[in-house]
Image (tube, rainbow, N blue to C red; front, side, top):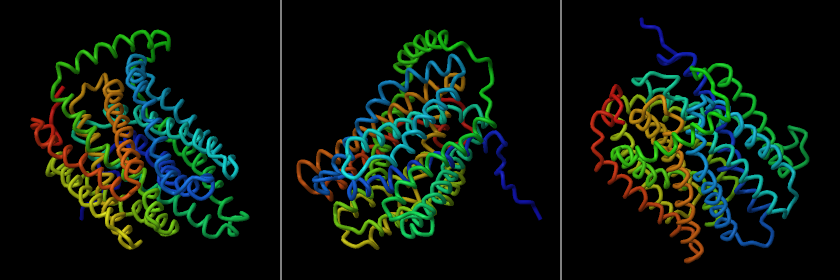
Length: 429
């Protein structure tokens, strides 16, 4: 009988890299998708309506994404030239951890302070992910990109789900933890995110080695700026890579918007906050095995086909969301999103990793992050604009569907060839 390979044929260094998803996903789950929208609506909102709070959250997400989009590609080029990917990751990690802990401080009605800290935490989380992603080509061989990438997302859902389950219990039974009420439990949950994120991130820094000598930071800045200019010019000569970035921008826009605004949408249409939080928890634990399964599927049918299946599910989700009136319907959508969310993100990352040169991974992943962050701008702007114009959160969510439709069509128009169909494809760049 063949012995089960719990490491999935991946090295210890790959597992150490993937553990960062286990560490930082708690920010995405407990803060971005879970408690911050609820606390914003019920504690910090003040005199704003539910719809106004929903729109404001979308505007803040868009603003953070604009800041990241303007600086990350240049920082990525600098990180490549000096082998400073881990150093930049550490800096943004520190920012995110500090902001998460400080979210426990703003008092009721102190909306400005809460939004500023949320923005800084999101900046640390999203910008740090660019340098984390850029380490993928350095920790796994090309045939294992799909498996390694989906492992990261799977561990992320596991870690996010475990802490979120603890946090939900804290809110529902604050006396078990020596807390005075649910509000104190939410604030304590923000602190647990900071501790969990910072503690488990140490595994990556101890177990992952970039290789090569690290240049001085001043020299790396000069070389990085030159490399950034060179890569911008190179992108004009790489139509396949540029085309994929544009298509990715379109469909990941919708993925980001659904994740970030789901709870805010549920509150805006009158669903109970307790049910929304439990539904989000269900998503996490569905997504853990689903992401691992997506890696297996991607290796057999190719990442393009697997991504496309996920986008079809998303189209159904946003259209059906416009008609829901019961919490069980929200649960159904939560399960469907959990089945495909991690797979679409992970296989997009691994497909892109096949198309870029390994030695310039941070710079090219900077542009990958740039598309993702511009997507994080455009999606919330669509939602905020439609919500503001029509006053209907249902129409605002349904409007996201056009991004999935155009992105799906564009993905099949690209001549991706073996890169899209074969895990062992060579670089397309």
